[in-house]
Length: 113
Image 1 (cartoon, rainbow, N blue to C red):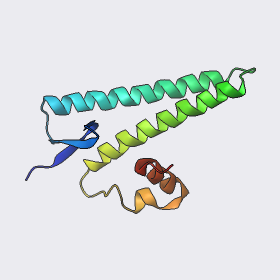
Image 2 (spheres, rainbow, N blue to C red; image 1 turned 90 degrees about the horizontal axis):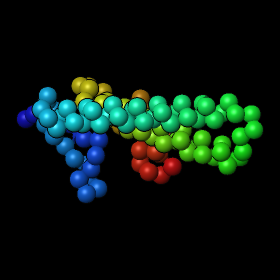
Image 3 (cartoon, rainbow, N blue to C red; image 1 turned 120 degrees about the vertical axis):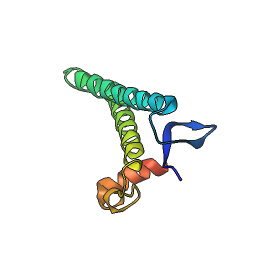
Image 4 (cartoon, rainbow, N blue to C red; image 1 turned 30 degrees about the horizontal axis):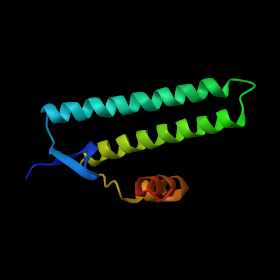
């Protein structure tokens, strides 16, 4: 039985999988993961830029928080997807769920944040 890779998109709200390999769908998924991370980096840079503005308003800082939350959520999602492909490292094991940070990440993944 071959190993399956969970894709960074869904099939009508359900997880989508493909056999792990170097085929076209895997290459598209790799490219999409890279684009997701690039978008997260852009959000973080925009937040840094606005954070340097002395007269930034509360509304602007709320926007920054939204950008950063989006960036973190996307980066965590890609990290989890990639972690699922590593042999012997359970994504739902103690590395992820122990401690305050781990609990926060798990809550994000569960959609209970």
